[in-house]
Length: 508
Image (cartoon, rainbow, N blue to C red):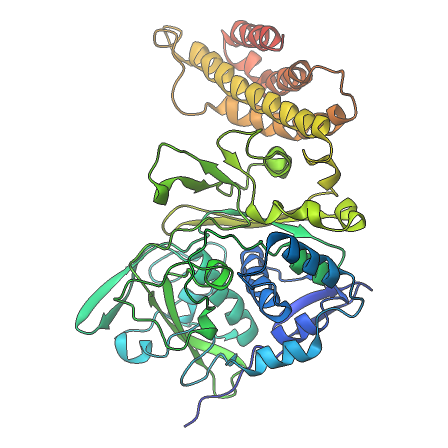
């Protein structure tokens, strides 16, 4: 029997928010056709939104001609500025021509969208729909926050299956997966996805049209000269055992670095996914610096390991990353702001003044554990960028560094004070324990929200010493967190007084 049809370019599978405030589900095609009417994507799962933005930016490069590697930097910037003046958005004929050229059906028998049909033969076992959907327990894992079990797996709607398909390609786990046999070679271990445990930053315009054009990374003469393809554009399915083609701009860079292979099993009507194959796609590394990530750079490392993306941390507030976005690399040694941000000063002045940053994070470990995902939105920050206002950018960096330094000192004095109270001999040779103490956990929980309020206040008061302001927040947090301990521990008052004194002296 022929497989059912679910054409993602036409089916309502991507939720979007329009400028008038209403929401709709659209296919990929209509998202681009109506991008100038859309305010933002409305995907409720941040890592899926991060992946969808990369897919849409890659397609934007194709339909606008901004993927031409022969175009000079000046010509490229002028072309992008001209496009931003178009009131009707992208050229409809170019969009239809592009989508008509490729297969977007999730359940196509030959080239299902972002899937490998060979898995039906190459894998002995299916992974199960619970393995496909992030957040569901699967296998022998306990169902802490979900009623789903492997004894009664419930299907997932096809649009949500698409979202989780995207997440696996970008944020997929490392470790044991379904055995896949290719040309007599049987393997069952997958490598981590290219964005696993990372924090993704996307310039956000007034419309999705502006967002996609502003977020398009510029061509670079250092990219390999090989033909560039997105996975759905590749002439043939890739050979899993062969070395992958070089990472090229922009298609393979943004959409072609997955290390997972997936095949969805549909319901009879194609509106649901009932099962899935999930395994490895390649065992080779595909090193590249993603243009939407902050990278920590270590020149002493080999080229393949020189760039380390900043990790997502749900306990870390977004303002602590602002200076990494605003400062150029020569002002912040060892930190490189996202490559997509390097050409934002070429945008029209009215757009730059209102440009915000959408942040998508997926707090994970490097292998299999998923903690939580989150999203955040900055105010318009581009007027503070170093190229526009060096003093503001430096003040932001100064305040962030002061907050971090005081925060670390707060952890240290809390650990020392706790050791002084709980150890019979007042600690071990004056050294605090390695792990955070209960006082440190409580104090930092109180400190960082106050520090954020102080941070924004300091930006409007350039003459106020940052260390002094944050030290006052730390002292307040320490006293509040340890107040009950004074009545509970004989030596607590003395230890807390010494800790407060250390914080006071550190602020000068």
